Length: 323
Image (tube, rainbow, N blue to C red; front, side, top):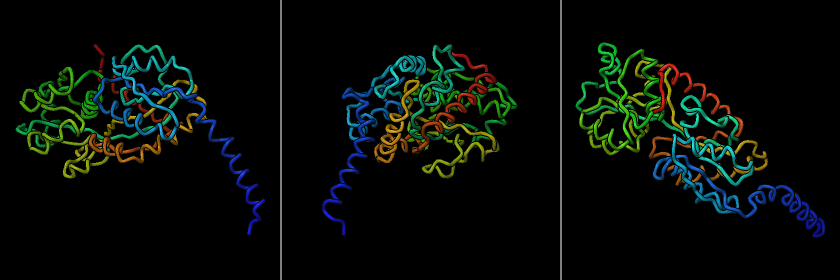
């Protein structure tokens, strides 16, 4: 049995150790709100993730978190702001695949790989879809038709350099086919035109077309990722459809300004990891056809670097240019 005096000494030592470690992270916020920048307008998945972080992080980091939308140029405007922010814990940014495509699409005034990688939040597949009355029953049907009649198949995109555009061009490059890319302003009109049979295919997230798919108004030809979508177990992946080397996954994560101190990064990693275990975030990703992925720090940085290289090749081969 430990004597009362010895027990109190042990408690005092333990409290001293906590005092030496825990406050270093909490005190870094200096009572000021943490800003989470989003490079897109409200309502999208990037914005949704940021708002869940704003709701759940304060209990874990001890200060208010606010979302700041800075839309424009596929996230470039927001990233320019982050690049000039102080390397403390007060400014963060939710990024996605656009973050790694932008270096090949724009003349940037910052180094994308210089941002501090903190944590990947999640990732998931998109759906290659066609009109339900289309002659294309499978992805192989569409590819065969495009080979016989180059430029006849029409794919709509919601903007140059978006995930749907890049995933499509990567598919066409691998299949060796020529498809006509038709740009739209936003996702709503292109879905309407697909349903109306005015275009042949689109690559979209599950959440944007799930109602049409379940109602039988839209046919899903394939899933862009490495695994089948649980809610669509009969739909094959692109790899299963005859292109084993193909994979295109959308993803989201959090980065900070260049040269963030390691103790702050480590504290944020722990806090974000706890939020990833929260059902509200998991549900948001699930609706998008995605799941939580815990890739952090240097590992997340390697993923960003590999994605920059991947999409640079796709953009070059597809001669993709922003307007």
